[in-house]
Length: 226
Length: 136
Image (tube, rainbow over all chains, first blue to last red; front, side, top):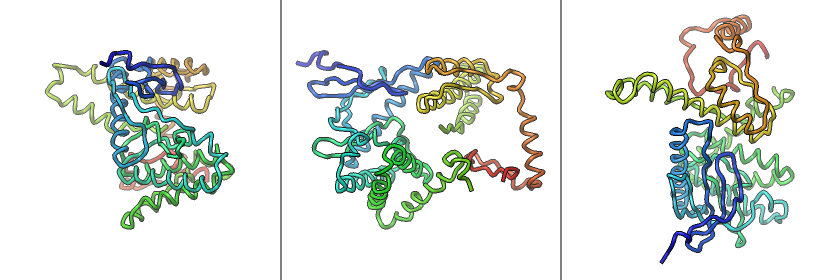
């Protein structure tokens, strides 16, 4: 027989802008509780509605995306009234911290895989919204998991997809400068490989549009503007 | 940090045309809801920006800066992030007509006039994509 003590939080492991993450157990399994924090500046009714909706959206996205064969945490339980998602705890290391210690072969294969993963998301109209090296986990048996679908939304716009890629590029430049060239090149190679021949034009338009985004004022220092 | 308000007005309009209007809710309910929703969006992106950049100052400007509710919300998140909060004096937050007219004069002096047919509304136009002829 199961009792309520089969589900419990252990400790706070991360506090983000929107949510707090707790480690814990769910019927013996190691899990993460993602709890969306109430925002006091918002009207209570509105706040509840927003947190409820976003919890549902994120959980749904995780479930849908998993069906494409992408490694994302398995959702075990959704508690909309408490705006909490209970999902599988992915043991491993953030790509952000382990990247510099990887050998070149691994860098190549990981970033190619990541690129292909993002292509599968995009082809199916999913925008992750926050692809960073902090949201990619390398497990002990070298699988790559994409986490945090908190900013996920649906779109088939070239612009929205380019922004997704552009953000990742910015992260590589600012946090992994010396690895940027190789990693982003492999990432794009993987991204292209995720598209079929009939949709490769669309893929190239998305990649090309990254430059257009970069040329916009806010990303260019005043002295570098044309 | 972009926000899109398209849909918000449409949604308010539908509420006005609904058969429930005047029964389940009235005009002030719609206005209140519209304001709370739009301001919550603005406050949320401001909070994200504060958390991300770790800036220590927030300055609220523009016409809507005159709104006491928006001031309250922005002040709240500024305090949460230990940032200094300021708002432009009311006399600079009222009508933006002069600013718009002045921009029009600058535009006219450097690039001439536009044909009315070319002055269409582009809801997705980005601020950072707009050409500023008097600066280049």
